[in-house]
Image (cartoon, rainbow, N blue to C red):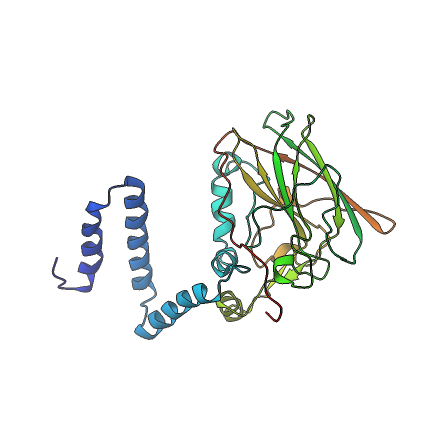
Length: 293
C-alpha cells in the first residue's frame, strides 16, 4: 500500500498482518497498532518526544542485568503488572484474590527447606518473624504437596540479589505443604524499601513527582499441578507507604496481621488456588549483583 496521508499508515500496517498465522498473535498485534497509533494522534506526539521515547525503551534493555529487571519494574510503576494479575485471577476479576505481582526479584531454584526452617542464610539483624501459612482450594479444602517459594527483602530494604554482602539465596526458600495444606518458616521481619531509580523507572517517577517506596511485604509463589499458579505478596499494615505503593500492588485481601510479642513477630495467612494452568513464570532475574553495583 502506497502511503498518501497519515491516516493511511495505520491501515497499511493492519493490512500487512493478514499473514500472521496465529490468531491470538494477530489479535494482540492488531490491537497494539490501533491503540499505539491512536495514542500518538491523541497527544499529537512530536518528533522530539518520539525520539526520547525510543531512547527510553532502549534504556530499559541497557539497564537490565542478571540481577535487575527494569522492564518488570517499569510495568509495576505503570500499574500494568497488577492490572493484568487482577484481570486473570479471582474469577477473572470478579472477587478478591490472593494473587499479586510476581515482582522483579524472584529467582529460580531457591533452596528446598524443611517445614519450620529458617531462611536466614547470613547474618541479617532484625526482629525475628515466624510465618505460618495454608494453601486451600476455593471450597476451603487443604491442598497437600503444593510448592511454595518464599522471598523478601532484608530489614535494610535490600533483596540478596541486590546486596553482595548477603549470602547467595539469603531470605529465600522453597517449602512443600503438608496434609493440612500448611507450611511454616522462620525469618526476619522485612522492611519497606525504595525501588531503584537510576533507570527509566526513575525518569517516570521523577516526572510525576512520585516517591519510589514499596511497603514492607513477603513474596510467595504457590504451585501445584491442577491448580493455577499464583504469585502473591503479604503486606505489613503498619507501613507508611501502604496506600501509595510505587508499584500499585497493595490490595485489601493481601494486608496481613503482623502480631508482635516482645521482640518477635508472627504472621498467619491462607492462600486460595483456583483450578487452572500450573505453569511457573520465567524468572525475571538469574543472579546477584557484583560488588560495587
